[in-house]
Each structure stands twice: as structure tokens, then as C-alpha cells.
Length: 237
Image (cartoon, rainbow, N blue to C red):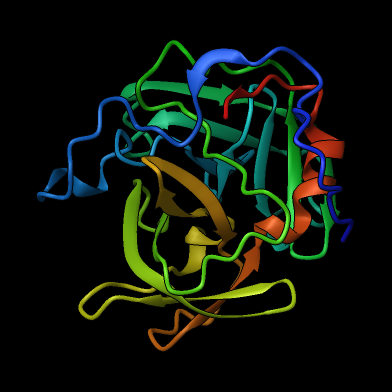
């Protein structure tokens, strides 16, 4: 994957919106039952097929683009939907937003989905983008949180980054926590730094293993993501 230059110039082509990436403005904290709430994980979306069955998860990165796993979208064309702002699928709550894709591109373990119509990043507390890490950012040793729709509702899995190799970061669930699994594939794995949640990884492992899950290292794809998603508007860095 392409590497960035050392420039500090803003990689976004369009003016940034008056919102913050990686910040959950209505976070409810880690006390149950609200810990899994979409308000704590507002960058999380579900991928739904045309028979209304969910099959993967994804991450909001800007107004027009969703980042997911290549395995979720390869061979599907654009015959699926993106569902945002719905805690439990089928309930419509807090206010379900559905978009159809107009294009899908893949690179390595990642897939980028362009939405037919922009999604607002300022109107809803449970619809916010994760921050994209700069090229080659190292997260090994950091806490990590996966979120996804394996159970038909947004749920989170806590863990940490225990190792990396090439384009892969290994996510290891905390003791007593769950592995990401099944329809969690493609979902965000974020690490918080400086009060912002950075999209360190994308769930690509299908083993459901508690002993370490190889996940896509997003920072290695930074230039490719920017090159292919700059038609959308980003929140402030």
C-alpha cells in the first residue's frame, strides 16, 4: 500500500465539517446495559442484503464513504444496503437511516463503499465518523474496542492490540469479553488517543478466536483510503 509523504497538509480535498471525528457526543459510558449502545459506538453501521438480512458491519469515515472488510463486499456488486442510526435492526430506533451503494472498491483486506446520498455527520448523536490514523501509526499495546452487528444489534467487544505484522494487527479480547464473530466482520476496531477514537483496525478474522484475531491495519491503507474517499466531506481532525 502507498505510504504518505511527511507533509502536514490536510489530506482532505473538501472543507471539513463543523464536527469532530472519533467523538461520541452522547456517550453513556461503560456501565451496563448502555455500554453496547450505538451512542458509544456511533461510527458503526450494518450491511444488509436486499432481503433485509444483515451480513456484515462497517465504519463511517465521512459523509459518503463506509469502510468495511473486502470479504464482506467482494462479488456483491452494489446489491446491498447500509443501515446507520439503528441500535437494534428492525426497530427503526433511534432513527434508522438507509443508504444504497453506488460503487465498491477493494484493496487487500479492506473495502470502501460509496453511498448514493450523503449521510449527515452533524444531525444525529449516533452517526459520527471514526478518525483515520496517519500512515504506519502504531497501536500495539493500546486498548481497543470492536463494535458490530453480530447479534442483530450494535454490541461492543473490548480488548487490546497485542502484536502486528505487515498489514495485520492482532486484536485480543479482554478476559471475560467476547471475540468478534460472524456479522461483526467488517466492523470498526477503535483505539482512543487524546480523547478521540481512531480506526486502528477493521475486523477481518472469521475464526471467532479468543486468543487473538488478525485484523486489517488501517494506517497502512491511509493513502489509498484518502485517494478513494475524498469526494465525501470529513469532520475536523
